[in-house]
Image (tube, rainbow, N blue to C red; front, side):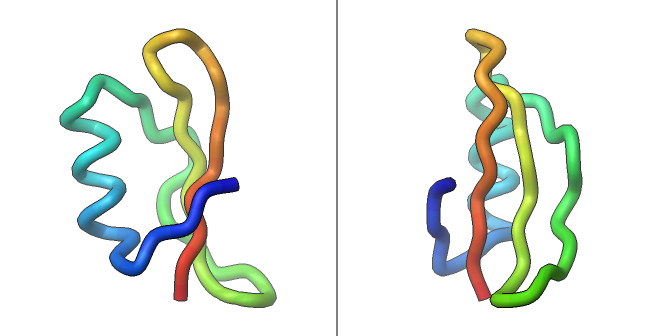
Amino acid sequence: MLYSEDLEETLDAVENAGGTIVKPIFSFPGGRRFHFVDPAGNEMAVWGQ
């Protein structure tokens, strides 16, 4: 899992780089996160406050 100070900005950057958002930003215990698939097919998550 990756960390971001600004989830909205990071989500935009992921999309602009060719990633596909598979779970939009949502809250979970400990903060907020989103999941994406990179162009190579790897699913990752980014979390922040």
